[in-house]
Length: 468
Image 1 (cartoon, one colour):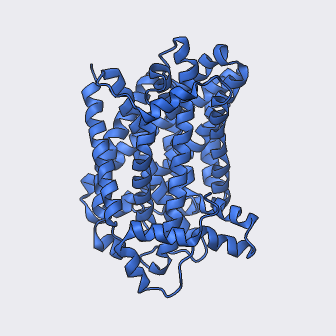
Image 2 (tube, one colour):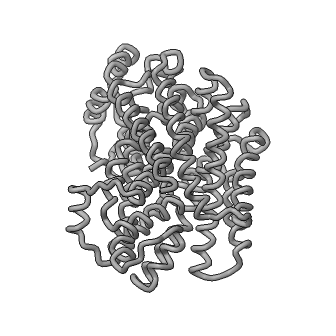
Image 3 (cartoon, one colour):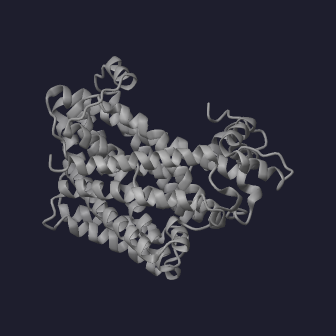
């Protein structure tokens, strides 16, 4: 269905969503806009056909990778706990969070595409250094803890499958991730990350390999159940904090900046406003499909653990590897194996996003050259942050820090720091001295502030449930 989208539909969607921006663009360019899929397909093969599929694959990039990285081993643990503890009851949270994710990630992408700068670089131009430093420090701390937790989960999953030494696996995953980011050419590395998103299909396969009462699933989606119970609220807040995380904002904005540098003819829209219509359409397709893929996989994880663990009385799952191990006697070795290997695949995807988003934020704050497209010699500070955050994450696995508590506090920090970052994102994207004619249109602005309000409520709820 997506492949068959005609440029007229994309144009109509853009007019409805972008309002005055589209009318301004009409005065800038005389050429009728095309959908990004159509433009790429015609470049590849004027006859269409298979080239249209290749065009869609090329359109998918920052949004797809960002969405898929959201289902990292830490996220898998959260979704597994939701399914094991509450059955199908919390599926509604993932349906509810999808449009909020789409809106805030589209805003993140617009910042990078319009200005040619990442989020930290834009905030730096308009707000005091103390504000930016505080936000970036919290982001780096949360990301580093998350990296440590993901490395530990990947190692535990690999040990479940084939045994072996913990230290060797931890070092192998950490070193491989850093070396790939530093030494693999950017365009090729993005291709690797795209293929790694396929690892998430493991959780779709798992859901269809177990006995699922689909009628109960549909009822849970259509008739959501709410509760003020402390445990229930804690998991709801954890799900929201997992799906809407600051590192995703910084990564997608940074990747849009990379795209303006690497893709022939692409420029920041502030300098090339004639590209706006097709670029905004591309961002929307990429982001909405990426977030839909992310949340669909999360739903299947909840369904799997609800239909197996919850129905067999297993209610306390605190890590993704623990979820895989618990599935083995209930659902069989195949389900266990696919679930465990999926943890490794999603971890390999998430590690560079977590480390890379921290490096983008730190580098832009300190005025360094940043970007995975740059060679090591031209961005030593940027790559040093990637290596340092990954290295500290590795060391955390040998510290006295409880990995379960680390995951919890990482979610707390992510939930808290997301709110001020989202506020500043909304403020800068409403400024004409930052966005020019591309200030947020009314519908997108409304959606962004609504997402911010929901995350503020989630952060308050997080603190309200602590200690209960």
